[in-house]
Image (tube, rainbow, N blue to C red; front, top):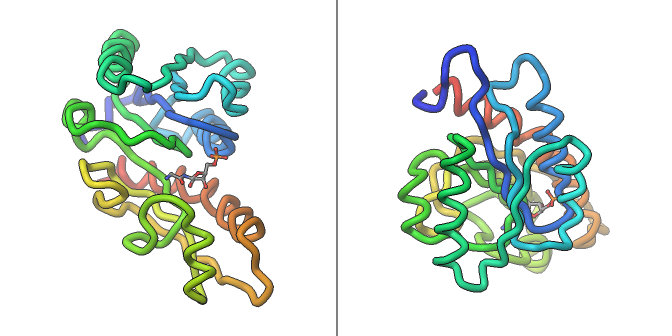
Length: 193
Ligand code: GAR
């Protein structure tokens, strides 16, 4: 895989918008010997994102960009990522849509985790929609990012059973536990391709 750089870990940036529990699990994974990546940069569009605390805790460089003007924010970001020699981007609860131009510059090098069994329930409010449709199962998906929302090639998925009295909150929690396991597995898979 083009991402692999021999013995050294691939320098990776994680983009977040909120809690950052996936960021935390990726940082923990990155510190294991089997990890092909190191987390060297955290990007957030939200200055109040709780996940930014992990950047502080683990002494990882960070950048907050508000994305009010997407073009300006993305151009700044591209130069920062270049300066920091970032070769892989992991979106982890990042709630902004990256432009075609940005994605082209990191073609095949952006991964995303989404809280549904894609291609079902692209976009927002996945748990609410799955429950309203009386689905028996939901889950999470790690996929490559292309220019169409939540539509890139799927790397791995994990299915979870929806219980009788499931609520949006309980389903989100259940799926998040699986997300934390799935993202590292998907990264290992991507590097073995
Ligand atoms: C996760 O469930 C992730 O799959 C989802 O946001 C949550 C972030 O949690 N992402 C999306 O909905 C992207 N469209 P976290 O901040 O604790 O990792």
